[in-house]
Image 1 (cartoon, rainbow, N blue to C red):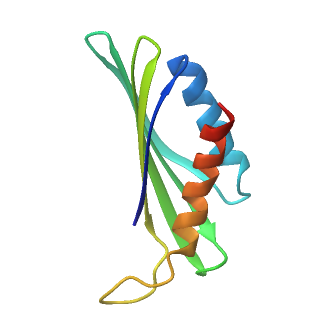
Image 2: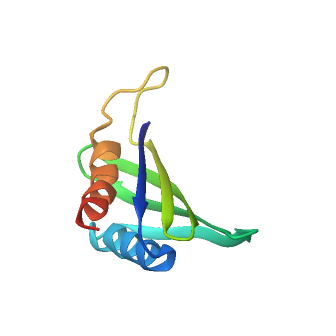
Length: 110
């Protein structure tokens, strides 16, 4: 399991749209599985779940992120899972790291 956290400034919906597109365009096998948008007072919240095939591990990996925003202050937490074929411990997390790196590169461009 790999995790990424970032605090940034920007328009909530523009950042959300940019990240969504980067993930789907980052891999032919990437798919949007589900998500939800909601407000808690003045705070925007969006959760997204994606999945893709990892050729390195010959399996599927998942990426979930939560984007929260108040005014132009945003916080993102992203976590990947899957990608290992071992029964009792985790090996071969290359697919997870690569999936998370797609998101990190999109954030670096913002």
